[in-house]
Image 1 (cartoon, helix red, strand yellow):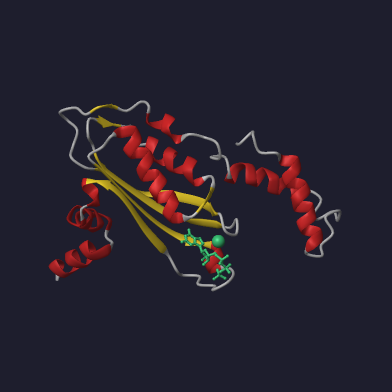
Image 2 (cartoon, rainbow, N blue to C red):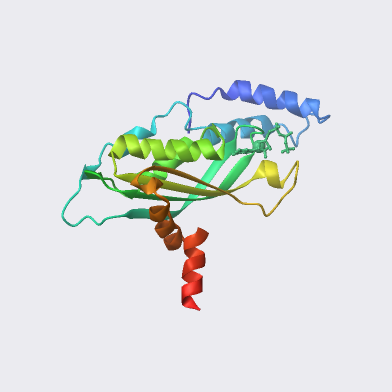
Length: 201
Ligand SMILES: Nc1nc2c(ncn2[C@@H]2O[C@H](COP(=O)(O)OP(=O)(O)OP(=O)(O)O)[C@@H](O)[C@H]2O)c(=O)[nH]1
Ligand SMILES: [Zn+2]
């Protein structure tokens, strides 16, 4: 949990918001709400001021038994949209083609969790994940695919409950559309999936 978050100030702000919507923050039902929200915010924003690069510091040299492509798919993604402070959630798929170093697989979700636990937009989150891996592993290429449902799109405003936003961020050799198509085929999305489905007929 983020110990730099000032829970007292969040709780005071939540009391103010409850008053502003016409509720009574001193009612028994709402008495604990300001500090519950403060605790939730400390969790949601635990990545503010935290550098994710440390998770990549135990990367090891590529060995003879290291394959060509590493793809970690279906990583749970949870973040908060910076426009409305509403959650967006979905999955992240991260591929990299190693340069001279590889990293323990669990480092990748940890990088994602840290960068996601900040006020974000999906595009920037994907770019930051790609850049952190680029800086930390000096790979030949990185591809980050994020797919997420946004609370601000589903539950207010345009109210598109089923809309899923997909974003792609890439570096190095995985910026090549042919390389990307091969990975999209592995993921079962995009033109690669269509090509595979047609080949199966
Ligand atoms: N590009 C991008 N847009 C986002 C993301 N999350 C939310 N948005 C959009 O950001 C916009 C917020 O800008 P505003 O102009 O303040 O939107 P608004 O008047 O609340 O807009 P509506 O959502 O259309 O009612 C909306 O269109 C959201 O759908 C994101 O991760 N990336
Ligand atoms: Zn929003």
